[in-house]
Picture (spheres, rainbow, N blue to C red):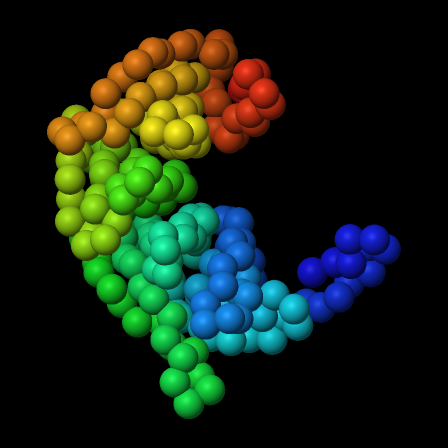
Amino acid sequence: AFDVNTGAVKWRWDGDGPGYGSPIVAEFDGTRQIITFTQDNLVGVSASTGALLWKRRFETNYTQNCITPVLYGQTVIVSGLDKGVTAFKLVKANGQWNPVDVWENTEVSMYMTNGVIVHDTFVALSHKNSGQFFALDARTGKTIWKSAPRQATNAAISRAGDLLFILKDDAELLIARSGAKGLETVKTYAVADSATWSAPAVSGRRLFVKD
């Protein structure tokens, strides 16, 4: 963590190597935490001091933890290559924090595509079946729907209200809603002439895409 005024390092946590996802900030029982994947773990550190609060072993094939954790209420939803999707809560007892599973879904799994919450639904792309969109009940983990297979190798998913902006790696931008039985497409656009692996940037009514 850096001091925003001077750039000086305020704290650092020296654990195992980094993961590929981004950290998130969440507050549990009055404690503000930074939660992120490392090379072989999922960790929570104090946002103010960087002190390690808890650590959960999380290893994937090829040493690739690529997912950004998703906060839903007081639960954290995570996944990894061939690891299913899991939601857990953080419980503090006797001064110690412990991640406790709330639900697990092994029907789908996430490799690089980060999920989003739409109301009480968790929507993402599974790497199974050569790329399959899915929706889970964020409260129970139950599968609501799965799309046909071979949708994309990767997709960047953003939410605006109940609309999903989904940029697939083949340069197709899909604007859709998550319905009761699947994605309900509103509009599709071809946004580039080559592959699009980077997440797009939204500025006002403009969408910037790196191909």
